[in-house]
Length: 484
Image (spheres, rainbow, N blue to C red):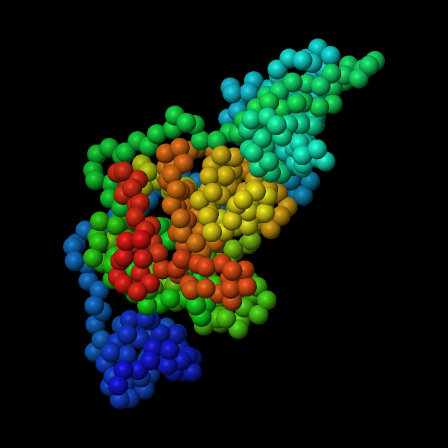
C-alpha cells in the first residue's frame, strides 16, 4: 500500500526532523512495512534534515547526464555584499533624495534643457508666454475640482505648481504622475499678477520621463555560446503551501537540460517567521534556521554545474528597508558552494547580458498610485519602473527605503533583463527591447491571497536564451517541464 506523502512528512516532524522530498518519494514508492522507523533508527546524531545520503540503501537518482563543468561565476556589477551602507545620522537623509534627483535629472537634461525653478518664479515677466522646461521631484500630484492635474515640482532651488489640462493630448500620462518620481516638463509660465514679476504656475504642455531610450537595442554576446538561464522567485520554503513535488520536477528537468548554467532566485526564498499575524499557523517548518537549512538541502540537490544567484526579499531574514543586504552567513551553513549571495536590488552580468534583479515590494505602492494597475498584471508595473528609471519611486509608503549616500534603486544603466517577483503572478513583457520577467512563486494560494482574490501562478520558471533574449515559461505543477 502506497503511503501518503503528508503522513510521511508528519512522522518525521514528530521525530523532530525535516525530510528531503526525494526521501519522501522513496518511502512512498517502496511501501515497505516499518521503513520509516528503520530509517529513523539509523539517523546520525545532529542531523536535522534527512536527505538521501542519510538513508541506507538509497542512492540519488540525480546524475549529470553531461559533464559540462561548473559554469563561470557571474559578475556582480551592483549589489555585492556589504555595499548598502546607511548614512551615519538621520540629518543626512536628504542625501538620498538629492542623489536620486541628480542621477535622473542628468538623463533628462538634453531633452528638457531645464531652467532653475527659482529663476523662473522670480523672473516670471521675462519668461511668460514662452516655452520653458523644468526638471524636478514630484512633491504632490492631485486632480483639482475642474478635473485638471496639478503637480508640485521641486528642484534644488525651489518649487512650482504645474497644471496639466485634461483636454490636452497626453493627459492620461499626467494622471499617472506619482509622488517622488523625477520628471521633466515643457510648458508656458503663467503671467505675473499686476505689480509683480513672480509667476506661480507652469502650464504643462509636455510630460517627459527619463524612460528607456527608443533607440535602445539588445546586442547579443559575442564569442562562445552564451547558454541559458533560469529565473525563479518566491520559493517560500517553510510555508505549508510550498510545493515540494513541483520543485522535484523542476530539479529533474534541470538535470535533463545542462545548457542552463545559471539559476537566479529573486527573493523570499523562505516564508520567514513573524512576517504577518498568525503566520505560525501556516508554517510547515517553524524555525528560521530550519527553513534555510532545508533551502540549502534543496539547492544542494540541483545539478552541480549550476551557478546559483540568491537575493533576499521581504520574507527573508534581513532588514526590510531597501536596498536589502545579502543573506547573513549564519543562515548559509547548509548551502552549497555554487551559490552567490547578493543584495536586493543587484545587477548580474552573465556572458555580457545584464540582469537587474529586484524582488519587487514597491509593486504594492505603485499599484495604489497608478490608475488601472493591478496585481494580475505585474508587467505594467515593470514598465512603470523602467519609464521612471527607478525601482521604488514612492517614499514613505509600504516599502521602507534606507538612507544611503547614493540612491541604488535608480536604474542608472539600461538592463537587458528586469527580473522581479513578490506578487506571485508570472508575466513576461518586452519594453523598448528590455525583457521583463516576473517569475511567479513556488507556493499555492495562501489564505491571505484568498481574502484578496489573488490567484497565484505557482511552480513556474522563466528560461531565457542569452543569445536572443527569447523567454519560455516552463510549468512544473503537474508535469516535468510544460510550456506555458
